[in-house]
Every structure is written in structure tokens, then in C-alpha cells.
Amino acid sequence: MRSGAAQMIPADPLHAGRPAQCPAASSTVIRHLGLAEYLPTYEAMRRFTEGRDAATPDELWVLEHAPVYTVGIAGRKEHFPRISKIALERVDRGGQVTYHGPGQAIVYTLVDLARRGLTVRAMVVLIEEAVIELLAAYAVTARRKSGAPGVYVQGAKIAALGLRVRRGCCYHGVALNVNMDLAPFSHIDPCGYPGLEVTQAVALGVAAGADELGRALAQRIAGLLER
Image 1 (cartoon, rainbow, N blue to C red):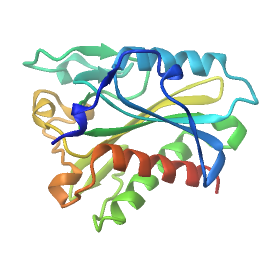
Image 2: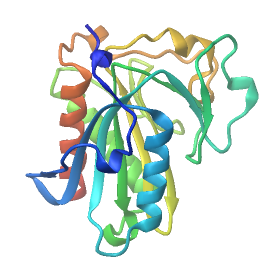
Image 3: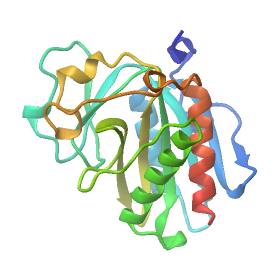
Image 4: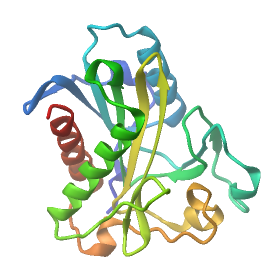
């Protein structure tokens, strides 16, 4: 059973549940939002980033989304869904078009890069490393690909990422395919690459669900941020 059976959370994610401090990284707040609607979550990320100041703790939001395509600011129509009734939302992250759905572990990274002395590239590498380390814990060998942000297993993409930076702070984050319906990816050019294969954790023998892997991934990202 996919974790998409969780209850949908339509409310503002900033007020959904109690935040938890990461025990390994006390300056990072981790929020667990369950199955959350995309647009309210996106708008909440923007409000959080606009309203934060130099003392605001960084936050990681762990969640899943109902089916939705999202396309970044450089998105090109030739990569868009060819046949689909799934909504497509234009957003302000980098990158092309991707798909989100139940059974995909998402971690949004609301991080003050300037305060931590991180470049955007360094943050991308950090997120990729967290995914690679997490999959290695389940005996799955994953790699980066030069010039194509994300994480790959035997050439197939298992995790996509995109960030937006405003006033030195980033938001958006990473989506790890865990146990989901991959068919919607076949209607797009994932991340702008025609014919790009995608895979997911369950196909690689990982029994853990999206909630468990999302929580573990957030802990790894938080730990790397504190190094």
C-alpha cells in the first residue's frame, strides 16, 4: 500500500503539526507535514523565506504531494505533459518539468545559505550526498551525474532537486521516488531530458516507505548542514 493513503493536509504547512528539533542538529527544525497540497505548501515556503531574518532557524519540511506536475522558471513547453489530466504548476525554482505524487518522499530545504557560508552549488552537492548516503544504508549504490543535478541508479533518476535563492536563503528541495506510480513521468521529459528513465526505491529492494525515508533523509540533510 502506498503512503498516499495518508490524510491530505490543505492548511498552511507553517501551522500543521508540531515542529521537531533534529537531535543531531539542534539549529535545524524538521516539520513532518504528511500528504500536503502543492500550492499552499509552495506559498508557505515563499512566505517563510520572505519573512525570515538572521535569527530564524533553518527548517526542513518532510511531506508527500497529491499528483501534480511542476515546472521551473526556465521550463520549455516541448518538455511538458503530452497527455495528462494532472495539474501543471509553474513555480520559481530552477530546472524543467517534474512530477510529484503519493509515495514520493519530499524534503523542502529552507536554509540560510549566507549564514552557513554555502554556495548554491555546495547546497546541491550536500542534498545529493544525503540521498546517496541514505540509499547506501539500504545497499543501493547511487551516483551524481555531471551537468544533470539529481541522483541516479544505473543511469535511471531516483531523486530530482531544484532550488530557489532569495536574499541568501534557499527553498524548494529534493524529491526521492520511493513507492509511487511512475507512469506520469512517461508523459513528460523528466527534468528536460527526453527519454530519461526513472526508478524508485521499492524497485531496488528497499522496503521502507516514503514517510520513513523522508524522515531519514531530512535527518541526513540536517546532519550534513551541521558539519
